[in-house]
Image 1 (spheres, rainbow, N blue to C red):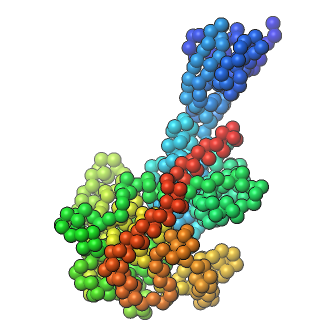
Image 2: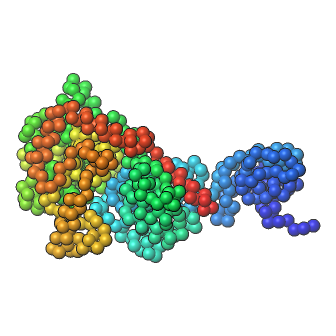
Length: 559
């Protein structure tokens, strides 16, 4: 008797774990035995039997066993011992790694968060043993709190700060000595697209890039996920098969929030018998990065002083504090003793008044958490504090400081928002919240690294030479970049007002007062923002889910 082939021996083991009827598989035709062993999608019939449906057989195996055969889930119909056998089992695959590269606070909050949520959902639905890692790349605009924010996401298994980035990129080594699985995918969600190619090559993983403005490496990336049709037009015809238009991740970030509702004032104001615009709430969004906060906090405080002078008590101010910014940092930027720009440009100074009831509640819950579990709370586990306190200017104007992540319900509670450039403009536009985008250029040398290449390196040089180069580069960019806000860039026309230059705070306050006193103008801006968003996202969210499915396909193709 001939020795039993390897595949047949595996079939014996598989049949032993299956229902008793499958023990008859050994007497089945060879193609059936092979199907039992390999669990591939093959036609389970020979010339002696009529054709049966195209099917595959799944045999339960250990999810993490390194030597277990790769088994794909699904139902199987085969003929064994003259009878039809119909079995069903779950997908069990070898472990895989998904490594996400990102950089700034905006990318972490609005790109990484929805994508990792969809990746985890897709992995659990397909019974894929997926480990999600996030690596921060160095970024001149980073706030320094990105790593803490990433650590608060339950869907992420491990993350690394920017300090060990180049060691990982060049040597494949991390600060904590991470191990790497044989198969995986590297995903780009912020930074330099080229880094994704290098890391993918270093780890031997597939690569996927989400392109917001341009697909720069279409011939080298396994999959490009594009925000819009316009980006596809810039891709060579021969490379378009690797590209897919998925829409805007900002839409997913907003849509995944349970607080995503229509733009309106808080209900408590409407319940007082006042109309929608009776007590305007002005949101102040100075940014989340040091360079922006140093200018934006005292500048917008000065705007609040002037706006209060124009409208009196019929206006309220609210500052949604970014999750990567602490109250201590905010107060430092608002204090003339610590921020020399205030006295230099005669902007507003102020101090922070803490909400004592919130402080007591937070301390109590923190002590209880430490005593019960011996662990401090992560950012996501902290109580959802609405009002932290007030930032009070020297003129006595109070600005409510609130913190919530994601902050969309706070944004939607504002009649209008005064914001600087950045991710905030995209989020506000997606929500349909009217805004004025302000970019004071009094101190351009503060912003380093606005461009890459030789000019970016020269701008980062310490001292007066680097400052002069940064001023020149930033001024050139502002004069040639066109629109600075995301809604206007998407539309190719002016939808929201942009004020760029050495703009006096009084000028911003005057324009804001005009909008606040003209509800029709606010409604028109709101409607145009929503119309733009409908066009951008094809009336629905889904970019994050498309990315997760593409990752799954890349892993299956590699298997």
